[in-house]
Length: 493
Ligand code: FAD
Image 1 (tube, rainbow, N blue to C red):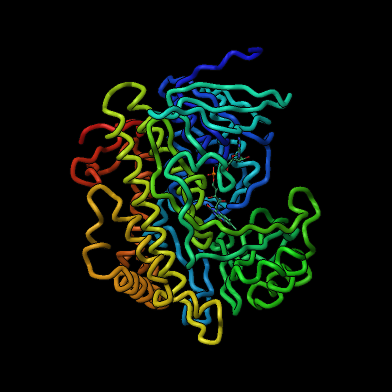
Image 2 (spheres, rainbow, N blue to C red):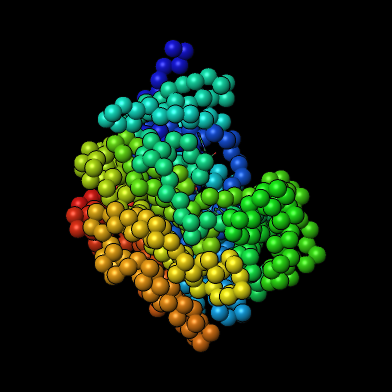
């Protein structure tokens, strides 16, 4: 053939945050990585509000933290919410103690075209063979394992590449994820639709919260308000999926109408024109984003980022799950390629940790929606823990129960519904304590739920900051592995 198959250690499909992370982290251990990306960067993507673990954990481990600091992204100290029983907005700060700011208790609001390009360029810099404008069209596999991909370059010619491992990081629209664990399992509870666009400015919250994401609940759903630059604000409405016809029929009109229906957001945008610069001059729509898989790997192939799972945009967890999943996969790949431990054991660690992290966010987000009270609203009435269908609860228990050890806190403490109600109450109590908080401690960290959700992120941040966790990391389950000193592989505890 005109193009002899290319042979490498790992092929990564997709150059978003998940793909760039796994590719760079494997190349850093000296392995040969080919990354195939369909678009030519910079390209547009939604998901602009980050969490500290991505910035201070993953970006630091990958070596791009300084570049991130120089990029001029808007620092984000936390989130401001008009959400819950109280009509007054409340803040959630990343800092344990709002007064004693620690150096990792902030994240950034990023223009994804620029952020994703930083990560992809870094992958290239550390030795990844990055091919943009190239599309993967299929997977090469036999009964035993996945052995490579079929892809087409800009010339349209079909090529093959073989590797010991293929990682699918091709996002929400992945065509190859069914090769691992079949169909996606979609959530009914989070079955929403988002319509989003940009304003050329907009009022800011008072300092020091001017970089916060602001999420405001209203009758029909909720709206995000993300300050990207002084002259650029990302505004998106999340509403019930039943609105799909109207929203998709005329996104721009639906977007304007929803903003007008939410006074807290409308007031911040009074007299501000819509953005006219590309790619911010369009109003876009996304739906069907909440799903997971019954399996995240098979011999020769793993799924990371949106190709594997996503919950819901409200807590900015998408890029965290994508980069965290990429790092977990890289640890398993580096172990396999170096032959240190057995493949099954290494990938079981990847899968167990990834599922665990996903299920924590899933659980927390259910309780987050449950917390908002609006008896007259169809949207909010349907988003109560008590309205989660049995099928979904069973699927969820299976998601967590699929962990090698099972999660006793979820499967052992009676019906999953009761457990979710308890989680929701625990968090709501913490939010109610906020108005009496002094500025020395953040009452949200008194909620076990809240602490758990950020626990793994904190471990990642410590690893980035100190080159390792402050305390010896314990395995997450009996027989489990722990991260190596450089954070890029798994070792016996
Ligand atoms: P992507 O960023 O989608 O990257 C996948 C890449 O693969 C793309 O570059 C694509 O071009 C490429 N690709 C696709 N198919 C092929 C192929 N066949 N061959 C080669 N390349 C291919 N997350 C947050 O953290 N914060 C937020 O505020 C937030 N808001 C969100 C709001 C909405 C409405 C939605 C739907 C999501 C939001 N997210 C948010 C989630 C976030 O967008 C994703 O979790 C994140 O982009 C996932 O990164 P990824 O690398 O897995 O996928």
